[in-house]
Image 1 (cartoon, rainbow, N blue to C red):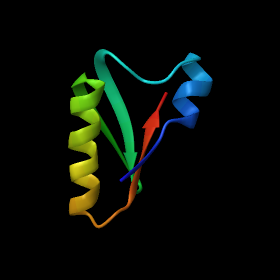
Image 2: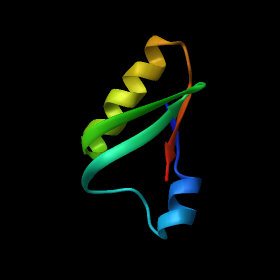
Image 3: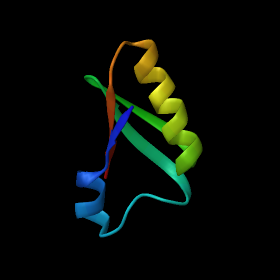
Length: 60
C-alpha cells in the first residue's frame, strides 16, 4: 500500500507522527481517524484495500 504524505509534509514541515485526528483521502472519500498515526494509517490502508485501491493520501 502506497501512502502519500507530500501535502502533509509541505504543510507541517515534517513527516506525520504522533497522536491526533488524522485525515486520509481514500479514493474520492475523506476519512478521519483518531489515534496514533501508525494505527490510523493501518486502518485507512485496510479500508482502501477493501475498496480495491492501492494508495492513500495523508491530508494536512
